Each structure stands twice: as structure tokens, then as C-alpha cells.
Image (cartoon, rainbow, N blue to C red; front, top):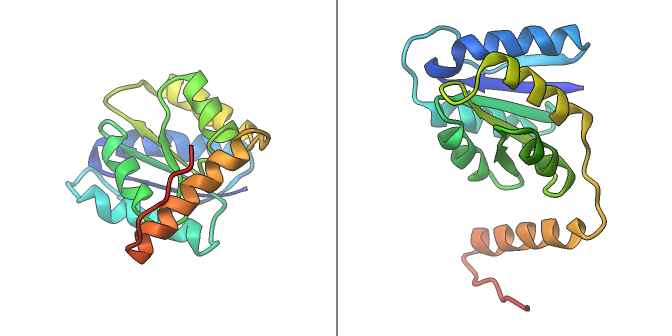
Length: 157
């Protein structure tokens, strides 16, 4: 699988560990930065990774910052992207299975490297289940399209 990865300075060390894991599993990894522990603005990295997925350069993305939250918010601003913070196995499974999240976000200051590696493995092994979730994921996309057009989304519940 082709995987895009990126981080800010807080996630640099964990990113290096995850890159090794991904390559050992046989994945093609594209590193979008940062490349050292010097401070960077994480939205630049988060956007670049998410944009690479939208353009079809990679199939999935992994973003790492201090908490995972900032990267997740940034990635979700890119039309067509569904990103999720993954800090436990159940949320990681559901991010893929129910929400078809293409981007996994983690906080290097929240979880340790061994748990992060386990969660990456879980995230890679799981796929979108479809079923009842198809309509929900489609509604997310519909809301996004309306927002891009400046229109109000009409709810029907």
C-alpha cells in the first residue's frame, strides 16, 4: 500500500519508528516532513499529506503531532478527507470500518511508540465495512459539498 506520513517536531521521533514499521511490512512510504525536531507549523504538513491523498499519490495517510488533534482538524479541512484521532484499538477499528477514514492521526505526547505501532497495524488491517455506514459516510460527503458551495445542508431525520 502507498502511505503518506507527516509530523510536526513533537511527532518526529514517533514518525521515524512508524516509517520503519511500515517499510518492514512492505508498504511504500512517502515522508512529507518534518525532517528534524525543529519547530514547524503542523497545518502545513497536515494539508500536504491530506492533499497527496486527494490527488491519488498515496492511498492512506498517517499524521503525528503532540496530541493528534491539530493534525486531524487540519486534514479534515481538505475536501474529500476523513481523518480520525486513533489512540485506542476500538476507535482505530471504527475509524476505518465505520467512517472510512483515510488518515490516521496520533499524538506522540499521548501514546507510546509500542501502542502506536499496534494501532498502525490495526488501522492497516481494517477496511471500510460498508453496510449501514455507507449512508452515514455519504451524508458526511454531502455536508462537505454543501459547505464548499456555500449552501445550507438540508437535514432529513
